[in-house]
Length: 325
Length: 114
Image (cartoon, rainbow over all chains, first blue to last red; front, top):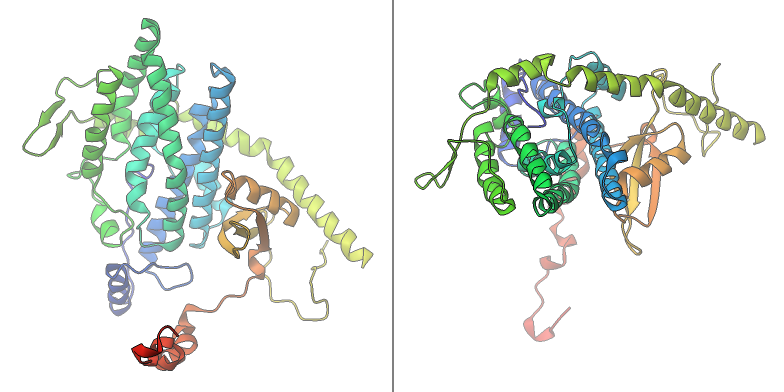
């Protein structure tokens, strides 16, 4: 999802402590920052929350791309508010990660150097205004699928960040669907634009849930620690079942010839995304990887003088205050 | 250049502080009063160069949808917290004092509400 392919760390702690820790998790107790936790739990969480935070921050870029070109002032204000929310979500998550003993600057450094990843979905371009609709509808829709269960995750600060995020996320999905409805009721050209956005973003959205359970080697430990609440395939199925009727309402066609309702399982059968493409995007070979990372790094470098200036100003104010006493 | 440490209590010793990493803004804990009449509640944390900016950032990060009518911020390193290891010593003694709860006492029904 926003956190894909999170490698679980092996843990070499005292078996007695580990058993007591697992018992607390099984009892649905929350783990808080200063309490004892296995080293593997801590490291896996830093990686997962960090990747989640980076996804929120980099996720601003494909949408920020359209703020100045929104079709009306109202759409512009809405999109601006949505992108601002994404920044906020990133900040909640960075703070949760920092309680595990990593600093904000270290997290940024790992993002900028490529040692930590963000979700593959943000390496795809947003070519038309309809993409703003499809991103809100599909990408935020997929994010909600994953984030709602994470409100019950075992790590307290992560769970609390998720509660805040989920409260705001449904605005994101609805504003996206609203754009899609408008375009689908518009001219033929506008409807075609909406169909084109769905065609391009459908499979990348399915990839957001990560590889198939058969390939997903890191799930078991994370699930017993309750930092992963559902398997990738469970969430992907749920997403397809929820989204197909929404596409039908819009009069759009999901770009999958094999999509059929399966009465027996009570869900749709559907085609898997191209996993080779997924691994290529993760490796840095997606359509926008270089552009996204460079934009992010440039924003960080261009802001350096502001960060330094404000620290200097704060130090100067402190000195003046002390001198006046 | 060493900057002096501000303190509300100038004559008391300062807690040991780890030297801050150069260039990283300090961490602030944010407390918000949700509505008039409620107490401030911890909502999260953020980085800011000073208290004034911490309040401004808290406004943007934690009150985008009318979540608050008042904000407190405090530098995270100034918070003193109890240790999880002291849990028993701190809280166990009250377990045996059930008489502190009103339900400990049986009051006859005919007395009515008490």
